[in-house]
Length: 104
Image (cartoon, rainbow, N blue to C red):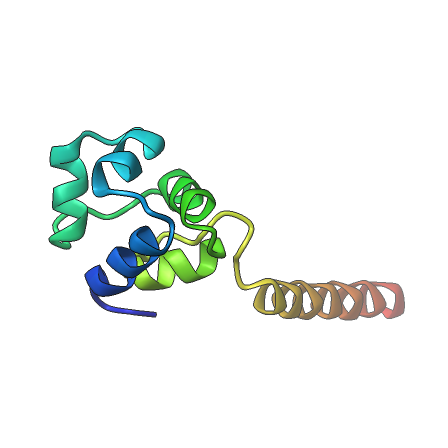
C-alpha cells in the first residue's frame, strides 16, 4: 500500500479525462477545502469517497485506495483469499472439536 497520497497519479488521471479538482470534489461530495486536505495527505478518504473517485477517474477502487494511501479497504476489494483461509481454519477447528466431542 502506498504510504502517501500520490498527487501526480491523481492529476494525470484528471488530465486524461479533462477534469479538474473542483469537479472531483463536487462529484465525491467533498468541499474544495476538504479535497485540498486530501491532496496534501492531511485527510484520508472514506471507502465511499474512494468508490466515487474510482468511478469518476475510470480506475479500479483498489488502485484509487492504493494511490490515495488509505488504510480503509476499498469497497468490495478486501482480502478475500485471507478471509477464506481464516474461515477454513475456523471450520477445521470446529470439525475437530465436534469429532472430539463425539468420541468423548
